[in-house]
Structure formats: structure tokens, C-alpha cells
Image 1: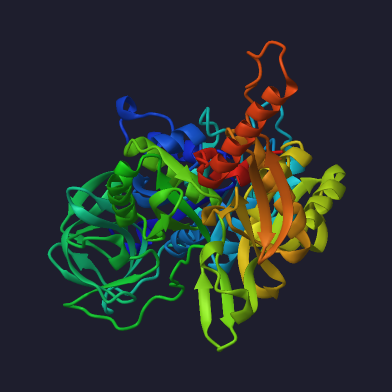
Image 2 (image 1 turned 180 degrees about the horizontal axis):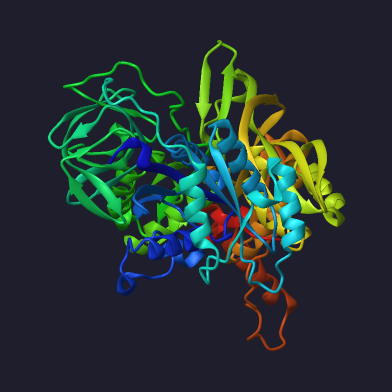
Length: 592
């Protein structure tokens, strides 16, 4: 296919604004997929994606329309996957921006528009769901004009569900988006925008050829990881794989390789071939670092090997997943896994439970901290129990984020209040028609557990939130430990700011009191910073009435029996062990 007949584009939108449905209609109209094979959200192949109504893995598809080759990349809309989105935008010349006519512009729409503008793409604004009774076309059109500075006539009004106006979108893609400008006679360079592991075929790369070409049988090399492999098969996707002999300049396609793990071919890396080698990598590659960590433990210790194997299998196709074995005196053996964000963690947990039939205990998610010791040594700790002795620590730095929240104006007060309770700093306030855009900075650790849920409840579900990692800042942080009947439980330890530690300690001890079962002896639950206890709750003992069968007689008999019982309880308290139930480890996640 000649380069001037190729159009590479992606669809960007907030969650649930209808981008997967629009992709379905496009495939129907271009006869890419037969009517009998069609099902809704065809590109969302995972059960999880269909249930949650979100795109987790991006999927490319090639369509033929009016003699042109249209390559669509369906991108994930969630903030956790923004690096993947930025790579898919890099593989395109244009973007279709889908905005819901009833909801208007959301935080994620803004974030993706900024990414598209940074990648210098032609943006085609599309107003979707105009057939809904709640659709407010003039208001949302005004918002789009405000954001992009385009004309009213540039905005296409469609309904992806009924197919109304979708032909206009296809025509606009052909007319407005520029063809690729690659150089066919230059050394080969291709951008990987996704990779996954197939159990039967090895690692499969989705990539866009920028310069040169890649043929079946070529020896390929990744410039960032220096991994070598073979192109066992090359071809295009429509949505099924169609093998070809070669992928030319400007085309989007796949390579089946003989690599064993996606760690060798990460998203954003540059592929070149030995017969036409290039040493210049494409710009923008970065190593994605997880910044949310949680311990995963099997309910029964016999399943530890199964859990380890399952996590290893998942990590083959998800190069952002990092894990290491962990051992806890209470929970036994498990793994500590690093994620890109909370949604990423949720998805991995559900996949482990569903696809591998595992029963898991997941500890409270935490972030990583940078610690400087008095000897000058730098440490990166991923859980509070790894913190060295406080006397050796000179400073602790925690990650902060830059966030943006879009809400209707009547909720500004309650949102700013919520940000302040999370130790955040409100930076800026601007208005998009009837809604406000609040920019703020906050420590990531305080937003991990239930910030999103609280935001949804204070804004009656209208608030949308987007964030990016900013920097590590020195804060007055302490480790709060928890003791159950005098024994420290390291899996419950958390890092907290000194100003919040007392309230946090009291709060968690109260929640623990509800989940730790009563014993035949009194159990104390305590929170401590270093050697100083800051909170305590007691679970009273079961009391058996040992004098119930006595009838009359001398009071000293009664006293003798009660003294014997007290002695027994004292002995029990010394030797008795408290079994801590698995719910105790997710106590932070419990809503108040």
C-alpha cells in the first residue's frame, strides 16, 4: 500500500464515552468484520473489560475504506495506563476525540487531549450519544470549542450506538488526517506500542513501522533492552491476524517473535532489523516504574507455589508488573507486587482469582519511600516493615502527585475540603463553562485507599479525577506499628505523617477490635510509634460462670473457684495465641 493512502489514527475519550462502540460501527461500515461475527465491544476481548465497560488492553485494527488503509488503535482511557496511551498516540498522525453529549468534557478527556497535542496530532472532535434524552449538544459543543479553539462546523455529531453520522467520521479521517511521512530507503525503525505473551507462540509485538520495512524471517533487535529475536511471522490485524510477507513504511502490524517474555520488548521501545540496522532510537521511551505496592498471600499456604506460578505467567504479558517473594510470620509465604495504580491492582487481583482459581489475602496497598541513612546510604523501601531503625534515618521522602478534578461548580467547596483532609494543596481553580477545574498537589499515599470513592460521594458521582506522579518530597513521616496481645504484627505496619499518626492509630485499632475474635482471655490491641504507645483497645474475655452450680454454702467456696479461674486466665494469657483473621489485613480498605 502506498504511504499516501494510509491513515493511522486512534480514538481518545474518557471512560464510558463510547469509543469501543464507535470502533464497532467503523468495522461494520468498512466490512472489516462480517455481520455474523459482530458482537458489541469487539475489541475488548477480556471478560473483565466487558463487565467493567473499560478498555484495559489496547487493540489495533486495519480497515479498508474508499481505497484507503485506515489503521485504528483503540486506547485504554484510564489514568493508570497513560504511558501506553502516549505510545499509541506516537504511532498515529491523528486522533478522534470522543466526548459524551450528556456528560461533557471529563478529567481524562483533558489529560488525553494534552497528550495528543504534545504528540502534534490532528484532532477530529466527535460528539457522541446525541440520541440520548439527556444530551445537551450546544453546551458540550461550546466546551469543545473552548478546549480546542476549533469551529462549530469542525465538530461531528454522531450516535455510535445507532450508527448515525459514523460515515462522516470515516470521511473526515481520510480528508483531515495526514498520511505517514516515513522514509522507505532509510534504516528500519519501528515503534512498539503494545506487546503481549501468547502461551503457544511466544511474545507478539504490535508496532508501527516509521522508516524502512520488516520482513518475515528478519533478525530483529530492540534498541532499549538490546534483546535479539526472530520475526517468525509478520502481518496486519483486522481484528484477527492476517500474515503477510512484509510490513512496509507507515503501516501498523504485528510481529510474532521467539522472545520468552515481554520484558525483552517493552512498550515504547524501537525495533530494528539486522539487514538494515539503525542505531538511532525513536524518542519518548521510558522505563515504567510501579508506584503502588501490595502483598498477595494465599489463604492456605499450600497454594503458595500456584500463586507464584500465576504471577510469573501474568508478568510475562505485563512488563509493568514487578514482584518479589515476601514472608510474614502471620500470613506465611506470599509475593509483594508493584502496580501502576489502583485499577491495575484491582485487575491483576481479579485475574489471579478468576483465571487461576486462587483465594487471596491482599494487604493494604502502600507506595514506595526513599530513605537516606546517617551513613549517607540511599534506600528505596516498598513496605513499612522494611524501614531501618529510626536512629539511623536522617530523612524520608514520599511521592507526591499533581492532580486535576473536574466538577460542577456547586461542589467546589466540598472537593477542596476533601483535598485538604488528604494533606493536599490546592494550586489553581479555573472554569470550563458551568464546571470547575481544580488543580492540586497531594501525597500519593493518602489517595491510595478510598480517595476516588470519597470524591464520587461528595460530588454525587459528577467529579472526574486524573493525576500524574510529580516528585519525592521530604516529610515528617513515622512508622505506626500494631501489637496484638503484646506481639507486633509487621504486616499491619504503615507509614504515616506525624500529624496524622495518632488519629490513624486510634482508627485502625478500633477497626481491628471489630474483626479480631474474642478469646477466653483479655486481648489488648495497641498502636505504637517506636517505643511509645499511642492508642489502645481491649477485647474483653469470654466469661464462664464457674460458680453457677453452687447452691448456698460459704462465700469462701465461691471466692476459691473465682481465684482458680483468674489464675487459669492469667496462665492462658501468657501462653495463648491469638489467631488473626485475614480480614484484619484489609482493615484500612474498610469504609467508615
